[in-house]
Image 1 (cartoon, rainbow, N blue to C red):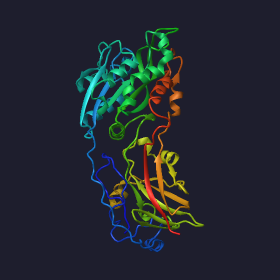
Image 2: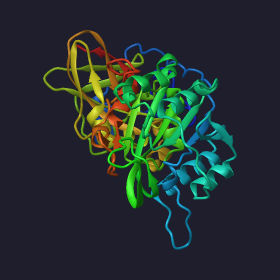
Image 3: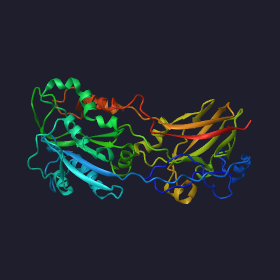
Length: 445
């Protein structure tokens, strides 16, 4: 019986397990190698030999609630990002982006609960949303002295609920300790301060942005001057999102939708997404038949001889960060493995399914993307094809945004590479894959 993965509710919930379940468009044949017409598809397929009944989809497990706590560093060094505005004074980039982020956190229906804090020179201080919004729009009277970076992170993650929620940390992440010798231990200090990340297997997402700055700028390197007065020069600030991997993924995909281009993720992984062969005429009518492939026994049976076999699969990637859903990113990073065989992603085949395709064809509803796989060798009677998204390492922009001397303001942060080195060292090498899906194959000799 031709089969496909049955649709589950919105991708706010993670899909668990791999099943080929439910009939594909009634009596129509699932032919993953099929091409431009129904006749060609039916001819290319063959009846399943003793195919087993479709396995029901597993019962959906309730996703953990998305509880969010937002922490804004409230110090003299941050005050320049939030000048008091007016009709003749446009908001800074910080005010625009962070204002949008905290507003989305406040009103987004995906967020179960939200709390807001100021990180002063003591423990985080809870404040109402209205107070935080007023600070961002420029109603700042007297900022605090601020807290040293490692202590700020340690205080945020030491809270009992930190391992069950998303912590959003907004700061310029300038580390300027009174003990200057501490600079030599910056990666170790960061790793110690975020110890719960490795102990409780949390994920960290880092977003970098620049903004115009007005007022006193306090660099980490204090020579030749202790501070400078800026009048709109751009300097960086960062948003860190820390929490259970599934919740960090949800927050970045559903709430932080205006995220800047500079992104780095550590420890981010998802449960197994929905994944199944698809009738290719639903996704690309121009494709022609390729090889002999048909659905059987919750997998695919194929004949691979002189000509490779190709088939199309659907994949639900809605829980990934928006940047990772881009077809160019997926084409570059997705990895295909086939023990005792050879398989690859067909170049240029990764496509995002449109809302029209998803709503017009029920079988496509569970998927956000379609891609084409090619099997050119299958030596064993049976094998398992794996499609995985390896976790990217620290991106190149981090080094470009790092400096060893920030006394002269620039779009760089003192020791940013060292700060994120401490984050990276909190995870194993290599990083675990973001997800892996598998498809059983049978050799039809």
